[in-house]
Image (cartoon, rainbow, N blue to C red; front, side, top):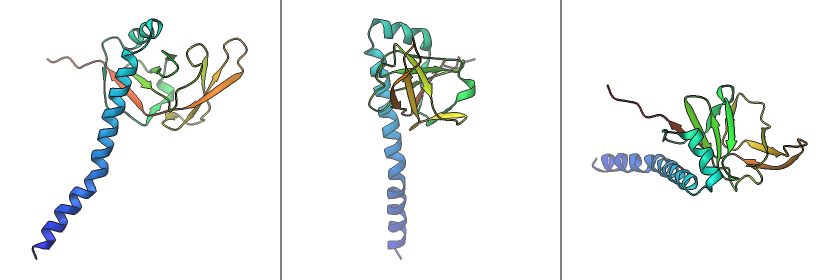
Length: 149
């Protein structure tokens, strides 16, 4: 009889392990994103300041609604920014995104959302020829802090 409560408690702990691991990965991604932004060169810092202003990083999300995005920029080949007005989403593509900063980013997914795992192409600004591609990671949302009152 006593083994049943112990077994249930053990099952609850084991069952929650993936959730704890997911939170840990989200925290790590958020911290890595903040570190990458802090490590940008002067040009990248200017882009980041323009996009992020007084915003605060939140928990990473897997997808962002494409229709709401107003503008985007690459602060570096490793830090991409997507602005929907209320939220700026920062993405650090897996393995970076070669030549992203000085060229055009083109999403090749026909979906209404951009999601982690989607591939984007980097096209030459002058002639529009694709030069590279990269795979999006989760997006770290930056929001303006709520004011108390």
